[in-house]
Image (cartoon, rainbow, N blue to C red; front, side, top):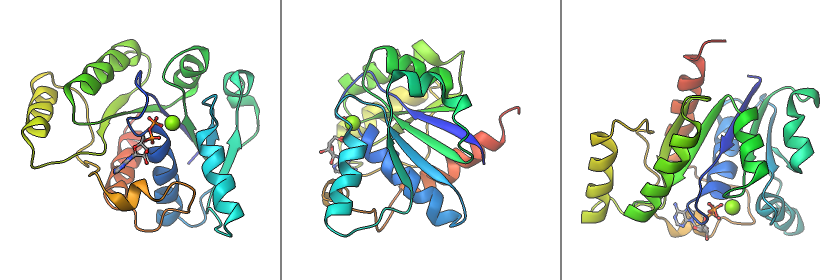
Length: 202
Ligand SMILES: Nc1ncnc2c1ncn2[C@@H]1O[C@H](COP(=O)(O)OP(=O)(O)O)[C@@H](O)[C@H]1O
Ligand SMILES: [Mg+2]
């Protein structure tokens, strides 16, 4: 699958980096032959740091992680990589814009708070007509009133979203700097992503 997926959200701390790494892991888990890379396109190189820490502790990530600058993202279609590219982006700026431009699909992570949801909507409004996109709820606490309010608001607005909802889990938080083991709800999320991308016009 020669596709590019951008993780984009106008807010920090919503799960862009975590979701980039877990979705990449899920892609390889589903098809061990697949060529998959994560581009660390945020200035903090969070994904690259994650990969480096994994390497230092003797853990091998089953996918590539590459640092990427603005020009790399802008020229993605010319770099010759065949496979699935997942771009971890900064919350705003030229790189975030270029990543959305380069993407076949945009995943917009949000937590189950009203404030993050507002930011997810503004991200979606900025991209919706150019690239297919959907909200992925991350770090959620499904039995709370807040969670219900946020999911109801998403439905009321007919916001495209993943059915998979990533729960708040200590194991996911602690996975930073390691190869994802158990994929939790990210396995379903990746399955949905694949389906949505297959349904897109070529
Ligand atoms: N499902 C989850 N459960 C618990 N903690 C999470 C989960 N997803 C992300 N986190 C934690 O939340 C923080 C922000 O996530 P991160 O992926 O770095 O967000 P972003 O890249 O959008 O800034 C990190 O400390 C991360 O470990
Ligand atoms: Mg990040």
